[in-house]
Each structure stands twice: as C-alpha cells, then as structure tokens.
Length: 103
Ligand code: TYC
Image 1 (cartoon, rainbow, N blue to C red):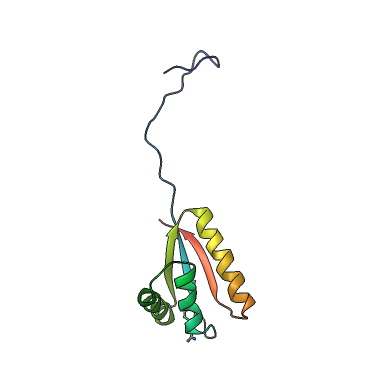
Image 2 (tube, rainbow, N blue to C red; image 1 turned 180 degrees about the vertical axis):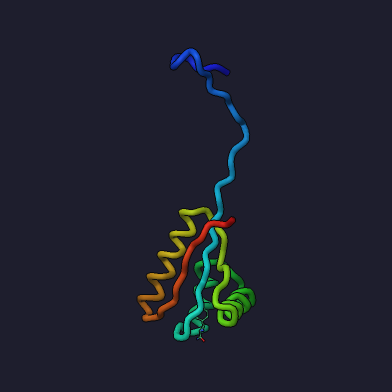
C-alpha cells in the first residue's frame, strides 16, 4: 500500500516474509595446554551439550584442530566467545574460541 507523504513519485512495497538472520559458528581451537575436562565443562555449561556429545566434540577438536561448539545469531555467538574466553583466562588456560559466519 502506498505510504502517506514522502516523495509522491515513489512508493514503498510491503513484504510479509521475514528474513532469517545469518548464523555464526562458534569454533573451539585446539591447543596443547587446556585440560580436556575444562573443554568438556565448557561445552556442557556454555553450549548445553550432553556429557557424551561434549566428550565427542572435545576429542574431535583435539585430533582435528578445531570444531563447532554451536551455531547462533551474531550477538549470541559473540557473547559465548567473550564468556568462554574470560572463563578460560580466569583459570589460566589458553583456550581460543572464535565466531565465524556460516557461508
Ligand atoms: N589438546 C588438549 C589436551 O591435550 C585438549 C583440548 C581439546 C584443548 C580441545 C583445547 O579446544 C580444545 N589437553
């Protein structure tokens, strides 16, 4: 429906479809020092994984170098990165966590 006011030569068209936001992967990166138990705890507490899933993901990161901890909208992904990085630093672990957009 045409809008009231504005430039009379243009009109705004309504679209009822909503766009889905781009999703971001939160990746855990392997290192030689962070204890396996700490990584499993992180996956359970911050990424809501079961103990079994957390152990599988941790081992996959340990062997392959990196792995997906979870997929979220950008704000949530960035918050996870900040929270986990802060927790790891508090415990003196060098764990690296990053977010990247899904292709
Ligand atoms: N490689 C670490 C170890 O042998 C364990 C580890 C797994 C560290 C996953 C980081 O993202 C990581 N203690």
